[in-house]
Length: 228
Image (cartoon, rainbow, N blue to C red):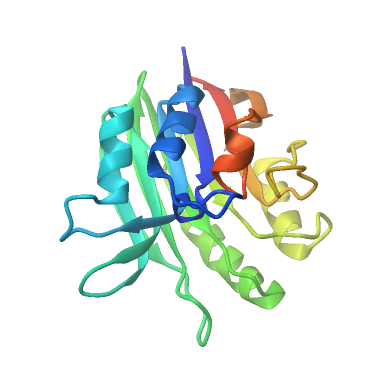
């Protein structure tokens, strides 16, 4: 049995053409045919009928789980999960660094095929030292988790493949070759990542590059199949 997971920075549904087009993002999400999708740079306007996250959840027939890091009276912004699978628990974890943009992690636990599967989705900061602190906080959470299968995914904003943050994650999860996802038109940076432990549970890892996905956001979706 396999489950398909994906991570996608949707850039507030604004495409490379500068147009905010949530239906275009929803079409890309449906193309992925994923069971669970981690989203970054998601907006929500709960007091409005045209709420982006709610509309994406409805269009994909998936349940939304919020992990917003910025909020006001009228809007929220940050991370989210969409899931077709039953979810046992959801936890939101703060990993912000002082004087930097607030950042967080969504921890989702599934009891699937007699296995406890825990996923952590995040969007790390732009600064090197900021990311290092966030990775240290994240690894404390992951180390303490009681999971048969651990999955870490999201936009890690790591421009340097030899950087300390990636080295720490590759040691814990085991390094895998990840395709470039940014910028979507002609990607050469591996900003979006999916790690799975045990690593032999990861059966495929690919970027979803189509005519539509190359214009819908400045990132391309990253998709993985995980054996359970």
